[in-house]
Image 1 (cartoon, rainbow, N blue to C red):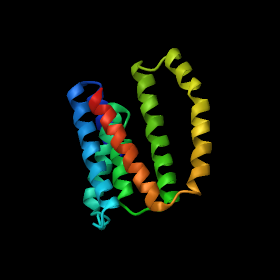
Image 2: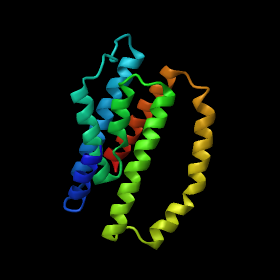
Image 3: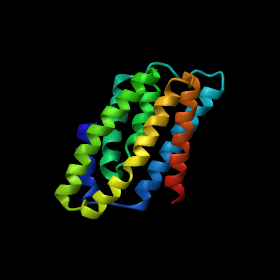
Image 4: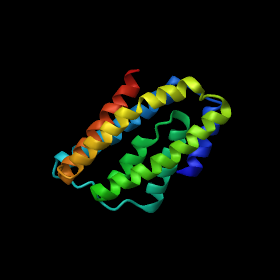
Amino acid sequence: MFFGLVIGIAVFNRVQGDLLKKMLGFLVVFLSLRELYFLFGNTNSQTPVAKIKSGLYIFSSGIVHGVFASGGPLLVYILGKMNLSKSVFRSTIAVVWFAMNVLLVMSYIYSGRMNADSIKFSMMCIPALVLGSVIGEFLHHRVDEKLFKIFIFMILTLSGLSIVIR
């Protein structure tokens, strides 16, 4: 994902466009609805994911993260297909996003895109981050694995739709 992030940051500094965003949104909606179909039906989509396929998704999520600061949907999609336990899924996502976002913020500071005003705004979001973490920790121990996956792919569907509609 790191190498994709570097490419994505380079692309972000040169190309930006609504068409790219909408294409990402449609891709996220398609993949999420596909997984929801399998989760609600009797069809099994949880065949082992080939390493090359998962590697391409992870690399692509790095590019998307560098361009849009939102590579999460592709990463969540492929990790959701790997049959990880909720705990492993959650800890993997947390570590990856922390590392990727530190690099992204460093690139924003270096390029002048992050300034005192944006840092103040980010600091105002800390209470929501803490509240979300507390609620997430509470729910983590109470939600069934299948229900968790359904919830994840529903959120991804809504995220993709919000990208398409904007």
